[in-house]
Amino acid sequence: MYIPFHDIEFEARVWVYQANRQLTNEEVGTLTETLKAALEGWEAHGQALTASGKVFHDRFIVIAVDESKELPSGCSIDKSVHWLQEIGPRLGVDFFDRSLAYIDERGQLQTIPVSQIKSAVATEEISPETTIFDNTVTTKAQWMSRWKARADHTWLKRYFQKQAS
Image (cartoon, rainbow, N blue to C red; front, side, top):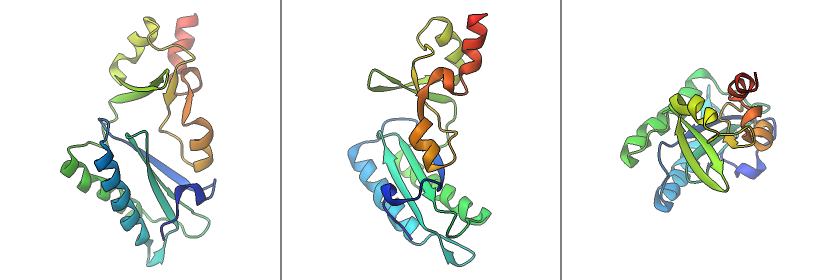
């Protein structure tokens, strides 16, 4: 059963997928409608899952499921991955490219290859205060509080610890 994202519980489990390029308004509309339709019929072992999905910043897809009502199964989680695997090639988008990190540089979303993060920290292109999108969040509450976080409060903190020594 699909519900609007703002109505899903804070404890809902989330998965964040990132597009390897900015999505157009038309693509966001297509993804939104596709997600609504898919999530409306999403089930685990014949039981409807209470779920939501939304596109943020024309780049990120967040899928959430309220596990207090019904737990998703491995097969149902796989099914949600398949939705994106199917629509991605039709849109010319890869939602599974983890070689890019996303930063918010003064309100502008920018990408940086993960392989270049260490040098970006060394040249101060990324500072401890730089806002990073941390797609490792697992609940809506975490997504709300730390999806956008200071770089030194994310998995990047190890680079700043080395820099301070």
